[in-house]
Length: 176
DNA sequence: CGGTTTTGACCAGCGC
DNA sequence: GCGCTGGTCAAAACCG
Image (cartoon, rainbow, N blue to C red; front, side):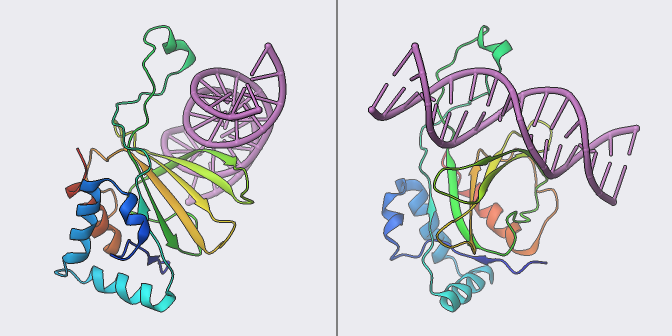
């Protein structure tokens, strides 16, 4: 298995202040909870690399945004509001983190000011339209930014040691 | 053979 | 209105 090195917001991270109150609280809880060994992994990895990292939630409006295909536009023209999205940086050799869910790639686009393409994935579980984007930074190509959009409506597909804990926490703190 | 990836096309939003 | 950009579709290719 690839050795992921997770970066989650530390209390002194300035970007945490930009997060919505509830999610900020959530991630404070993240760090306050030392009951599982996962936290130790994060701390050790972050101290090894001494890099800053963050989780951000740039999109706060809630919605049930169904993708409007041209055929369905006539039926209902909903205002398009973005789902909540969570982005976090990881330091990994691989682009796609094995988070235990089953993803199918549905697109790839070159993004401006970035020499690496952005990949678009959708959860393959029926009825679960969670999406994620994976993008590598031009500035530091060892850093991968993963953006999750939506919440999984089903248990994890293939539990992996660390990510299972992380995803479980994310469900607990989902800001709904 | 069924599921996944690739990739060009298409569409919508936004700024000028 | 036009061009740019991001996001998605969908057909073909690929793969186990």
